[in-house]
Image (cartoon, rainbow, N blue to C red; front, side, top):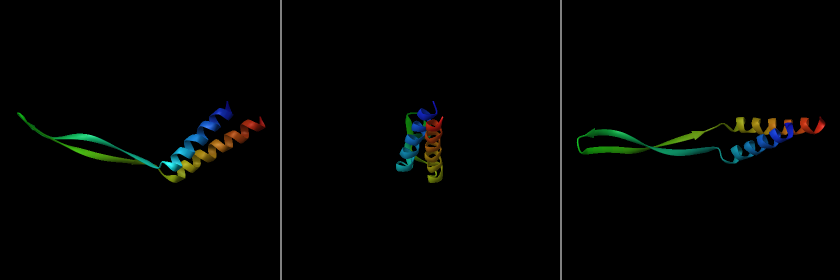
Length: 70
């Protein structure tokens, strides 16, 4: 069990180191007066710290080492 969790954590850690952010777009309604509608697209950026990615990778590696010793 510890080995499979370790493999998953190592995979997530490697992916998050290589892919540090993503963005998505939403539509925001500016006004809606009768037949006249106005919207705009707003882009949001989601990032996470590199230190967290390294911590997940290290935790997964530690789980792999503990799983092999048990």
